[in-house]
Image (cartoon, rainbow, N blue to C red; front, side, top):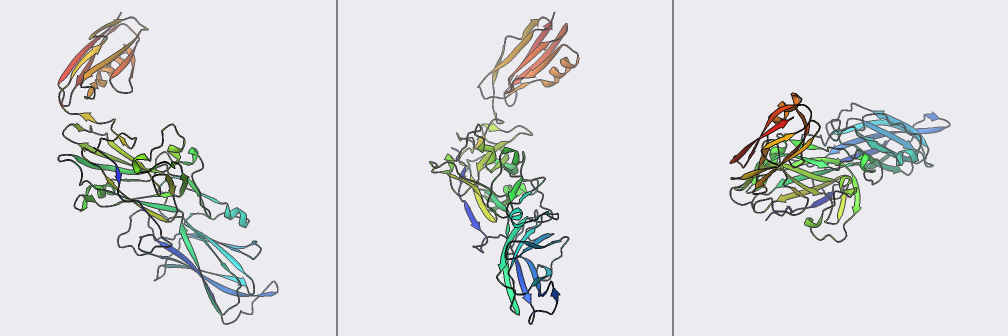
Amino acid sequence: MMKSIIDTIRKVAVSTLRQVAILTATAACIIAFSGCENVVQEGGKTSKIHITLSASNDYTVKSALPDEDLIHDVNLFLFDEKGRLEEHIYAENLTTGAAGNVEIDTEWLCGTGCRIMACANFGYRMVIGSLDELLTYRYHIAYPDEYSRGIPMSGTTTIAEVSSPMETVNVEMIRMMARISVRIDRSNLAKGVTFNVNSVEIGGSPKSVSAFSPGKAAGTSDIFNKGFVCSGSLADNLNIEESPGRSREARLYLLENMQGELLPGASSEKDKVLEISDALSSQCSYVEIKAEYNSEDYCTPPGEWLVYRFYLGDSPSNFDVERNCAYSYVIKPDGTGIEEDSWRVDKSSLLRKGTATLSISPGQYIEGNVGDEIHIRVNVTPEDARVDIGKDELEFDSNNGIYNYVLDEDGRGVVLKLKSKGSGLLYVEAGNPASDAAIIVIVVV
């Protein structure tokens, strides 16, 4: 029996636990002077402020996309003690020093306080006129993997008074994204079952996020139809063993999406299911894994997949995906890997192996008049056996103007709208491999 078991759900805020491989970026404000310089600015003296943006981390292996160390550009805002914007600096195409730091210099009036706020890797000069505007600013991305210039970050700190010969203040730059790490543990799969991952992607991926406050997707219009995807060689990590039965890691990224506690009665991951009719089912973030599947009884046809889905969050009841946090999941299918009643395993594409028999309703010879609608159904035993209605024949007759057609959603029937006099043929087969077949004659009089 398949249980999509999430063995490990670990969320760690990088700002508090160094052992999690999450980049921390710091902006250190170093007030370097031996007494304030005799530079008069509106009747006062100014001091230099040396701002260092540093990207340091403990990674031994880093993701290829995005570059978690990169600081490409920064918007720096300096506010006075009353919250008035005194200076806005935008710097781009930044280069890092030997210590991996980005450094920017500015000046500030001696004897006064300064609030410094920074936004990194936005890719443009922000239009901000006040502190309130910045605090409520929402950052938007055009596509889910718009991270070539680095992960978007924000941070703030306050200098109580620019007055000492040397004063160092750190601003912790917080990523506005979470990292999702996924592994597959195949150790409990039955003998002969193969589960080869084609892709893994984020569903419910937000298009925007608040720069300086926790937030969530602002409705379904704020969600990408398709989120961050790992495919090809990146998805192959889930097909390569790192230890017996357990795969390497695939990493995905998404903007913060704090949807909260939605299932207070959920006690296990199996309970973490939202009905498709619930609008929150698409606003909450989830991971979807598509895999080529083969067992003694079932297989996926070429170009179709067995689909695993599971929602993200801190617990079975929680649907929060928090900025600057790492979430780790291990998916451990049991037995055949498909015996699961919840929505999290979509088996609709699977084909049953073995022989099958079919019958045609209303029959193999169908006669009708121009304008008639004929519904043809293929009945097969066993019910979940493969059925193939010949699309080539349908297209041929349709192009010759004999009828228009619409296939049933389950692929086991077709509606013909008879258009002109003539005749056509329809070929149907069942079984995997094919073990029964029929030819249907359509005559329009």
